[in-house]
Structure formats: C-alpha cells, structure tokens
Image 1: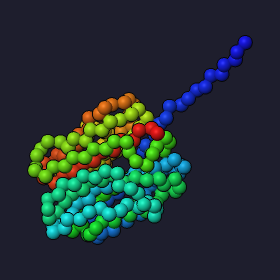
Image 2: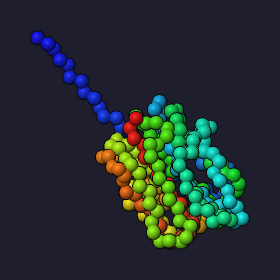
Image 3: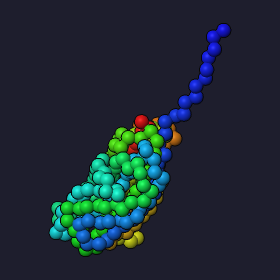
Image 4: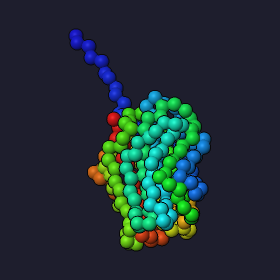
Amino acid sequence: MTMFSSLWFSPAIITGTNTANASSTSNVAAHTFSGQSLGAADGSRIIAVAVGVGFNAPQDGTLNSVTVGGTSLTKQVGAVADLTIENFRAEIWSGSVPSGTTADIVVTLSEAIGTKRGVAISVHSLVGAVDAAPNTTATDNDVSGSSSPLELDVNTQKGGYVIGYGVSFKAAPNVGAWSGLTELTDALTGNVAQTAANYSPTSNETPRTITLTFTLSSNGQAGVSASWFPA
C-alpha cells in the first residue's frame, strides 16, 4: 500500500495597515514627525510612507529623502503639479524596517515650503510575503484647472495591498473623495488639501479603477498609487 500525506498550503498574503498620519505647516526644509506608530515589529516588515507637500512662490522645491528611525526609504513613485514658481507633490517611499514599534519619521525637502503650505504623511506597515518595491504604480496631475478626477488605476492581486495619496492647492472646504480605495484621512496643511487611502485586494484586477476627486477644482493637483502583490 502506498501512503500519501496531504500538505496544506496557506496562500501568500500581505497584511497591510495604516499605522499613523501626521502633518506639518512649519516653514522649514526638514520636517520631523516624532514618535510615529509603525505597528508590530516583524522580520518581513516593509514601511511605506506616502508624502504630500506644497511649495509656495518663488520656490520650486523637491522631496529629497524620507527616513524612519534613521533608516532611509526609497522613492517608489511620485507625481507633481508644477506651476513653475510653485509646485504640489505626492510621493510614496518604502523600505525594510523590521524592528521598532514607533520611530521619528523625517521628511527632508530641497528648501523650505514657504507660507500657507505644508507637508503631510501617511504611514503603512506591510507584513508577510512582501518586497520593498511595489509591483505597479500610477500617477496623475492637473495643471489646467480641469474638474476631471485624477486617474490612478493599478493592477492588483488577491492578498496584496494598495496605497493612494493626493494633494490639491485649495483650502477648506476642499477634501478628497476616493473611488476604488478606502479613504483614510483628509488634512489641510495651510491651503493645501491632502488625502490618503488604502485597499486590501480580495481578487485580481487588471486594472482596478481608482479615482480621486477633490471637492474644489484646482490647477495644482497631484496623485499617486502603488500596488504590492504577494511575493
């Protein structure tokens, strides 16, 4: 008689969590967000930080680095609405940060942001079958004042994780409305509206339709999305 043993395999999955959100309106180039939650420590953990920033005239700055507890993250995707003498940026940075449950997150810009602008972050922990870099990304911007939504479609896989982020040059009552992702937070940094969203896919989609619509039309809008597949 031949004996057979049954092996049960758990499907690969990424457990993604939004662990913190914070903002700053200080007119400086280096913004320190102290003691931000990272979630539980894990040897597989990737920390992703979505960042939004608005620079005021006459500045035309860039986002130079993001560190988590001194560990440098890598820029994975970025969008900019460049109005020549000022600009509005949305980016997602990520990297391996296996230890620690809280950390200072430092966002360093090429220059100070100017008046009535700001920086905001949305922090995400990705644990499990995950690589540092996302598998697909998308960007969109608006520099013409169109009322059309930002289109941020990405492919998804079951068990993965998706992050979206957007900024818009308009103050209250301007907020972002997401379709295809779950809205997490809205913040006003000076007269810049910022919004974050996420999604844990339950199926494969090529692509998943994702849109971001701000309640006030602006010619300074930028949005990004990033999708991680189980490794």
